Image 1 (cartoon, one colour):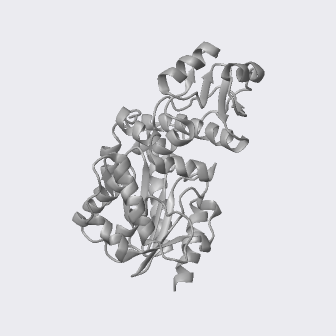
Image 2 (cartoon, rainbow, N blue to C red):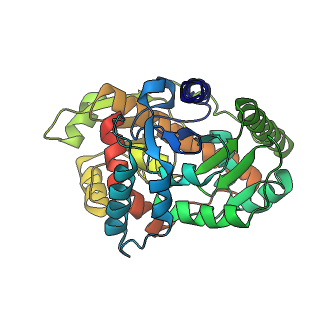
Length: 353
């Protein structure tokens, strides 16, 4: 039975591991039986998963986490939870389970697929997103912004325990403010049907609001890359990816955008002084530079620079889509600083980068 479950969740991971649903190492998936939950490893991509890659965790040991009392400070809390999660990993598994493993375990349904679709985040990042969610998805659960990890797990768990049981194979859908969506079902068809319904209703909502679901093509970039590299003045190798002028995320949109392209771009004319000012203000050099000559993404490798640019542009599209739901609601300073300093996300970026 376990092999059949793993084949199915691998197929679902590949299906929902495309750019329409996740970017980079974002999102996570799982399947379970009465004793074991198999979860995507942290830092891996949904599209690259194999059945053997999933981390098996003892559900009884994971259940102990819900009654535990972790330290109050965020770093101590997450270290405590990580240790308890690792203690639940079965001996024949390798890799570090996704930080969302305890949350996956709390769903009763066999299959769970958590993604961050751009079309969904237009709503979850909208000022009127919660009200729109009630109208469009009356049977879904909305969770106000909560720090990922154990805190989110317990908030969703409490909400699920209060939620009436879903009959038969109908999917359970949970929207997370400024984050994405969880879909849980007892069959792969239930997962697919739920996602099709979500995306279909949102496309209709954007059409009704007259909001395009794509960014207009940009013209050619006219960035002087040599001058740019001179302004950056890094001690290590620098890689850049460039596109023509386009909207980018101008603030912290979701945790994924913060992880891959940071919370804020450097805007305006590029100069050494501008780079120094940005670095002094934020504590790190810019990952995204947005000028009227083009958009520049800075990375530690070609892959990193390309993903940085993709995430920056995706953030610009989320801002555009949010106009259908009252305009963009950025994450708070406290929320985005938590993500920037979170060890889990540093690990995920290191593994996936």
